[in-house]
Amino acid sequence: MKKKLLMSLFFCTVICAANSVVFAQDQTPRPKHLLREDSAAVNALVLYPDTIRLDIFEACEFPASIVSIATLQKNTSSDFANLVSSYSKEEQEDFWNLSRYSDLVSRLAQGGPKSQAQINDILADYPDDIRDAALRQGINHYDVLQKMDALQSNTNAQFEQILTDYPPVTQGALRDLIRYPEIINLLNDHLSLAVRVGDHYRRNPQRVINWADSLNNVEVRQNAQDAATWKQNIEQNPDEANDLKSAANDYAQENGYTQDDINASPDPNYVSNYTCTPYSYWFGYPSWYPYSYWYPYPFWFDCGFYYNHGRMVMLGTPSYYFTNWYFYHPEHWRQYPHLGNRYISHYYGSGRMNNSNAVIVHNWVRDNRSYLPKDFVTNNSRRVEVIKQVGQLHMDAQKEQGGKQVPVNVREEYLKNNATKYPSLSASPQTRMEPQEGRQNVPNIIQQPTRQPNVRIPNPAQQPAPNQRQATQQPNFNNINRAQDYHRSVWQQTQPTPRPQPQQAPRQQMQQAPRQAPSNMGSPGGGGRRK
Image 1: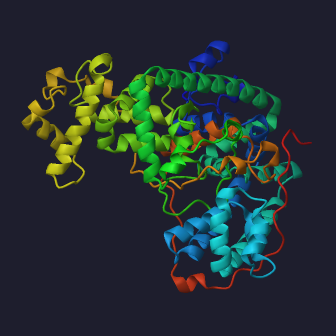
Image 2: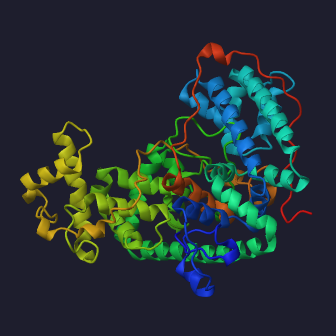
Image 3: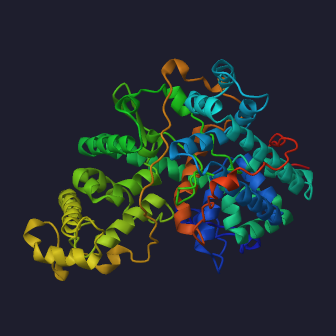
């Protein structure tokens, strides 16, 4: 999603990495001293709907509020991780999923232990996919739910105390943004950006709003074009479509879905209006994730399509998680080389390097360039076989080393000694890609995939219409999912330092009495420029 961002001279310290499309529309000189991580952060912010962008600008006027809230979150998430640390991973997943609905935990915890029938009555107001976890933990671990409720109430009170230091307009904005935990984290990780945005918004709010609206239009248009191009190519190439289907099946099974789950056909209206409730900002996402992961999407979002009675319905390009999973494992390149070919054709050479999928593809080419043939990028007719043999080379070299990860020089030596097994690869420097073709300056964001939570599609009769969903859920999936996915994927490029996970305390620490808890958090404020 790389775009050249433009602003007037008034904004010369705010903007980062201008896009040529915008530059052609506004001949303001490109600002100096720009930070790559700020560029990614600004791009991500403008993808949100206008009311959310307005809340962001309001909050940025008081960056100290962002720091205070982030500090409270760090303490609360650590307390919560300690609270559930002694339970199995499956039980911890239940607790984290329940935390996505703070009012659900309160209703289960308050008024004493509840029967299965009472819990079912409460669950009538919540999505079907939380039912099993609520029943298990509501019956088996009522004491933990009580402590979760006390911790939430105590945190709410501290949050409200923080808000008293700021004007009502800022209080409303911060209450809104708590519903989008990735935004608060992004701003806290890029405080220099928040300070600059807030300063310029304070001096000329309408100009900031107009600039963000303009850039949002460019980004949305480019994203739609990107998705349409991917969809068209997959639909027109049966080999690529079959590889994507097979890879998606493997991805789903590895993440705990059954074949019936995979083959399920959701109502298209359910997909179009799908909403995803994030993990609680205060409790955080599961502590074993090595990266920021706030939104547990169903597998079909990651794969970029779903099945409608056996027919592929394309949603857009695959997510960072699916792309990272595909390129991390050499057996995928060998088994599904047509999919790899589509990735190369779609992303390699693209100027949109802020797109995480493009970064992963460029990483793969860079890391394998020492045995990719000179015409790898231009010769589409033999590229599939090259990708397949690269996968086989990695697997064979690892097998010889006892299954361990193999350094590049070891693979090169293995190829040199076994060149006849890989006729499409280049053992000789004279026949390899040129070094610059490997884009050596591309950030390395690929990492060992972590099992994603399985979010199942309810039966058609249980799929609620959009106007029947509870008010606590997030806005329309299609309106903000690309902004969320951008955050989930691009943070690996822009994080100044690795995000530490909460330390889990011993069991006896968990048993400490919960802190006293006053009132619940107030309702989120509305959008729009407040007076």
